[in-house]
Structure formats: C-alpha cells, structure tokens
Image (cartoon, rainbow, N blue to C red; front, side, top):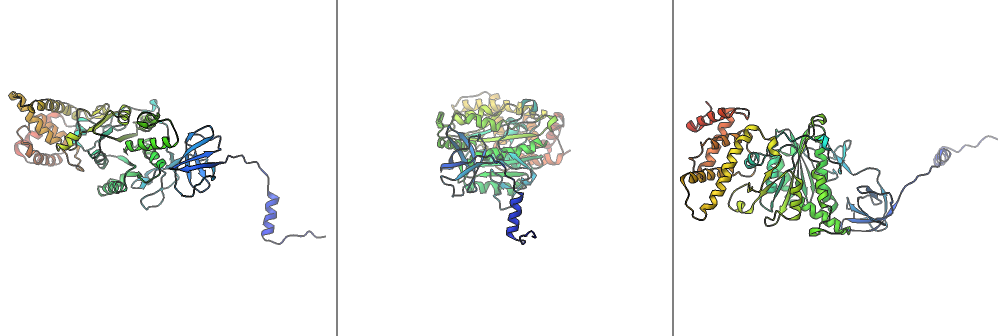
Length: 495
C-alpha cells in the first residue's frame, strides 16, 4: 500500500514542525506588579534582580530596579503608558540601561533614554553606552593642564577653569547661574570642545528658550541637549545627568574634549529625595536620603582629564546648585562644594548693585584651574587680583566717611575703573587675547586716568586694536606693554 502524503498546506507545515521539534528546558523568572503610582512600581518575584537592572513589563513599558526589600522590589518607571496595573507580569531585561552615543547626537535634543525630542529621526543605536558607569581609576587620570576659556572676564582671569575640572556654579535663583553656563557653552565654538547641556526638572518655556538660544548662537551644532522637564517622570529626571555624562564620556574616551552642564543638581537632589521617600527609605538631614552625597559624588567623579596613554581626552563638568537667601552652608550646596574642584559664587547684593556677572571673588575659588592657566595670563591676573582685593577693603572705609591718604585715594580710583572693566553683558564673550590686553593695560597704569563712564568705549577700542595687532599670548610682557603704550598714546592701529 502506497504511503499517504498530506497535500501541501497548513497541516503539512504543522507536521514538519512537530517532526523537527526538540523539547528544551527554558529557565526564567517572572514577577508581577503589586502596586503602581507616582512613578514607582512595587514588584514581587524576580529573586535574582539587582540594583540598576532593567525590568520589562507586559504592557511594553520598562522600569529600573531602584530598591531591594525582603519580599518586594522598588522600581522607578521609565515610560508612562497608562496601562500598567497591579497584576501585570514582569521579567528581567537581558540588556543594561544604555543610550546611543557618538557624533550623531550633536545638534540633537533627546530624553535621558536617547529618544529624540526635536522631531528628528531616532539616533543610530549601533553605539551605545551605559548610563551608570564607574569613574576612571586614579592611574588613568592626568593633572588638569589645559585651559577651558569661558569668554567671561572675571572667570578666565581670576577663577580659571581647566579641561577636566569640576567647577560649581552656586547662587540664588535669578542671579545668572544658567546664563554663565550658556555663555561658556557658546564660547566653545572653534575651541575643539563638544558640549552637553542637561536640563533637569525645568519648565517647558525654559527648555524652549535654552534650545532656541543655543541654536541662534550657532552652539547647537557642537552640542547635545538632554531634557527631562518638570512634567517628566521622576525616574527620568533622576537619570538625566547620568545620560548627559555618558554622552560626554564617549568623547572623552575617544581622546576628545567634552563639557557637560548640569542645570541643576538642586532639582536633581529634590527628585532623588522624592523617589527615596516614595520607596520608604529612611530620611536624613532635610529629609534627603543618606546616600545623596555618594550619588552626586559618583556622577561628578566621572569628570576628569585622562592620561596621554588613554588618548588624553577630558570631561569638564559645570554643575549648578541653587541657594536660598545666599545660604551657601545648606546641605546640598556644601555637599557639592566638597565634591567639586572649586565654586563660582553669585551674590545677590552685587547683582542689585549692577555688577554683572554678580560673581563674588572673595567666596569664589578654583583650586586646580591655576595649573592650566597660561603663564602670562596667570602673571598679569595675579597682579590685578591683589589690586582689586585691596580696593574692596579700602572701599569699606569710604562708606563710613573715613579720610584716606592720597595713595589710598589713587587705589580706590583704580579699583573703580577695574570694577567697570570686569562688568560684562550676557552673551558677549571676549577672546583671551583681549583679556590679556586689558590686564596689561591696567597693570601698567594706562587706564588710571579713565573715568568709569568712559571704560566701555575704551575697551571697545582696545578690543578692535587687539584683533588687528595680531598679538598672541606667547608674546613677552615687554612686547604687550610696548604695543599697548603705542595704542594709548595714539589710539590708532598697530605700529
């Protein structure tokens, strides 16, 4: 009897599948959601889950393991589908939390997971980097030895920043902390530095204004903006600075130079406090959890200058922190001051008096930036700083009507001229050669006869002369003095 063959069709394909089927044991874990709300999900099961593991929910959303208890797992939500409910099944994702990195992200606006927010195509996902990474080892680091110019006269001369440094911007709301950071980013055009600007918990109007400003000034083409606005999930706001750091680390590891701005870490600390309280962690000082210091330290320690054997790249961090009524000794500001390499303090009284940027030189410091400062700039700035600090002390006596000697009166007049020189409008960065020019002119007494009202016009003429003269920082002091004396005598072009 001939063997009967099934005609070609669905039954035939099923028979072939059954014939080829080989049973195998698949071992996996599956949990379930116990409760969900306020950007937090409590999950039962998954005994092998660890901190920072990614969870895949059955509704298509994801979460991040944030807290481990005896019976439950506390997870922060990374997506808001609106369909996650109690009883939803959960599995562990085989992939760590990462985002796309590389030059494809330049000019883009993304969320902390790398999803585009600017209406453009999704970034190339072939190159990815974990958000949570270890900071470089001590043996991998080099001394900070290259300057990072901000274009702000007060900072570049008196509070210098080096590539690989962590410099804190601290002050009350509305004093210009973000403006200083934006000025610094804009000034990196042509400096071979790639920038990442992280906006944490900001209003949408602030986000739009920041992006528009960077685009209008041509800075967006060498920058990436990471946004977790105020309406975003708390988990995304918490992850935003780590995403920005991962982007910048990619360039640093490739031997390039990167600058990342965290705007701001006060909001980030409040978000972390909110998540910790929702996860029922014991509160500490000001209700912040006890590990808030290590969270910020782990983030900021990733900024450094790598040694030449690893490419010599650098990652410079400009974290921003807010104070209330100038209280610099509050919990989060003091934490960040102890972590960073210096701080730039903005004072409300200076702001009200019309001194912009309102940087208090007495409370501001750069602990390692001086090593990176050009030798000629450092020499001139040292002379100028002594004169300015002496002026600030002498000015106190004049408030009480004290009579001063002629030499002291001269110091006060010079100090008032210097104060006018140090004033600077927003979005008006200056070249480092011009900063060298006005310091030499001031230190040599060429500006002593100026009235404060004439300072701006004189500086404009000096800036034009500096551009046309071709003077560089490597020129000796004698050459600068000779050229500037000729300028002051003739107020003409170069000799």
